[in-house]
Image 1 (cartoon, rainbow, N blue to C red):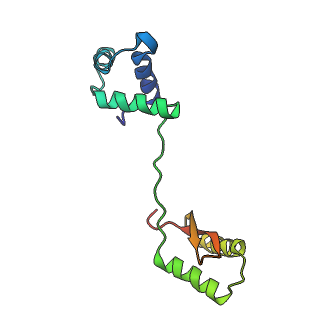
Image 2: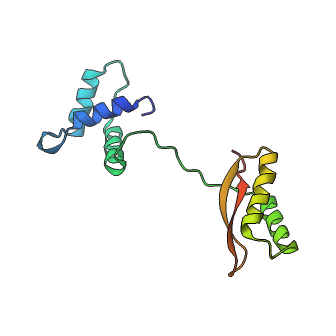
Amino acid sequence: MSYLTESLKIEILTMIGYGDRARTQCEVVRLFRETHPDLPPLNQGTISKIEAQYREMGHVRKVPSKRQVVVDDDTKLNLLLALEENPITPARQLARDIQSILKTNNKPLAFFDFTVSKTKHFKAYFFAVGS
């Protein structure tokens, strides 16, 4: 499905049709093969995914996948040590300090929630490992 451009996906949606003029997925596969013999043939699963994406999101553009942010143990430990040294440091100042250190080291930044105790919850910037 990676060879399908946005315009081809839109063309598939127009082949499906709407209302009482809608075609089945088998008919769309046959029609696509007739229209584009130079491209690899589609299967019904591909058409189903394109139609589901359009119904869910309202477009057929490629959506980047969301990767989970990974924070190494050293960074977590450094944050806890900084809080232990000066527990009254505001969370925003601590986040700014960490962000400026990471920017000077040219590390990519990612956002991460961190809970120190039941009473103190703040957000800080960390770098993602392996990105």
